[in-house]
Length: 448
Image 1 (cartoon, rainbow, N blue to C red):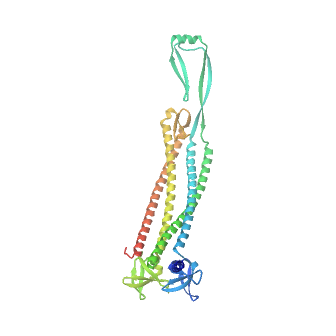
Image 2 (cartoon, rainbow, N blue to C red):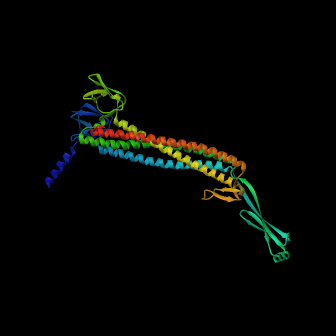
């Protein structure tokens, strides 16, 4: 039992002393030796370290083949970085979901008001022909030929009179009977569906509400764009961090911090003389010189030269910029898609209204009416209901034609803009994929 305890304690001490990668998270970290500051580390430096046995809250780190003391609070392990990033990513996802739900509600309210505005503009040209039925009793004797009578019937379309041939026996019988008949008289009154002034006030109110909803929707889109950018950056950084820690643990070389891309044509100096140039956009490995961090060491041919750091851009910054731009383009694509859907819905409404007017024109001899009440989008009723007067019909056809032409142009423009957004998004995603493929090839030590 005693031997087992000793083995456990010995194993625990070995495990506790095993170096592991630590990332500098503070802006700068002091390196101590014999309680004196002998150097500093920049944020983002990755190196090996172990907790100090003699000082709580301190690390013993290895840097340039030397040992130093540094405060533990200024570093984080891969596990700590993953936990912090996961919390931020989850928080972003929750907030994005809430904004998306509110965005959906506002867009639905906006679309309903835009459709209501179009319906009001359409309905102000519609008039009602309202039937009024009265019963009138007629008394007296029959007139006309004894063998022919007028038989009247009434239905939903009015009162119909039909000449009916009867037998002589029935005619004689009718003459001997007192004559009494109830006649149905249908009178029509015309009433406009929407008062013009009232409709204009309602349309203006809807337009004001639309402007408020549009402003709120734009505000939500801006907040969501920022959150989606942060979410995309955090997700990508987490993957980048795992790759960086993994490669460093295997090889001891933090190669990802040494990959740069030239921002322009970059002169290379050897012995303070220009030995050549590196083309713009070239991916290369470089080390920033410790004594003078404005210069970096690079390989040029078979020789090691120097170039200015201002001519180099760290690959992490390059990739992050693309990730952020892709997230922004994705938000703009979603917004344009929403705009196109709204315009297409309005265009469908105008097409339906145009169809109704055309049907009314075709069925004019029958007194066609348009009834949009109930579940059916279009019910045709003859004789009673909604009708279009000739002057109003001309105005309505002209208005519908103007509206259809205007929204059709907007739909075409929105579709083209949506396609442009998609092309830009695809191009940037391809650029990101290509750059990441080059980075992975450089990590593996192969040529791209």
